[in-house]
Image (cartoon, rainbow, N blue to C red; front, side):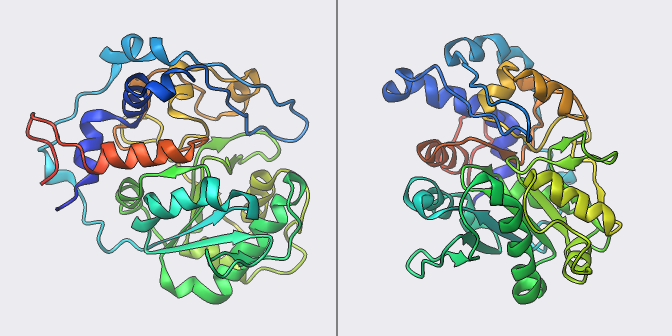
Length: 325
């Protein structure tokens, strides 16, 4: 079977797929109140957000952008875009989270690595020798990128960091990167502000570094960047700025969002905590119509939802003629 991920995504939009999954699955129907753990910065209290999945599809049905899936003239050749994906995980998450990444979107990366506190050769994971816990996420990130630079920097042109509950549409990522310059010190993601004037990219939404950005990180002086502590994503953003890197614009050509720090239903309903609205550079907008037809990432996606997403994106056909060949 020949897959064409982008075509189906144009017609559907990732958010509606999730709505369909929730509304058609009797198990998930009993869990329509989704408790979302907010990926908040230090000093901001965690607050669960309830989302009623039953109302979202009807409220936003007319806002989904209509895209001609047969207009293939604008597609760029993504076969030459090499992306290394590394996943931040933990021993307790291998079966409940990381395994689903390996079975779904991780297979579409040119290289897939899992970094944890300890080595597990059976999975496998690469142990960093860093204690588990939110307070040590900075150390895990810094050491993972250092390991990648030392051992894998020639195997890709772009280097994606994602959590083990982040779903990535790799084909869309490559399409986005086909328009970017790997020799510019830049990284893309869900752009947050505060802490530093330039802002930084959310860790939960995943962010992708250019080869040049990774090179500068690998060749940096030992005291230029934080070794541990603080908010992982903000600290890494500070590090890249010190190295002359910048946060790239990750919105699509229509100004819609591509990297998403929360579950699709959260973005569709706009059920954000107040701090999110003040931290997001481009605004925490609500509605399926604000999500790009070429979404790249969503956060807080459970393992069974990753399986459902892969099924609906890569295996479902539709009678309009835009299905898979």
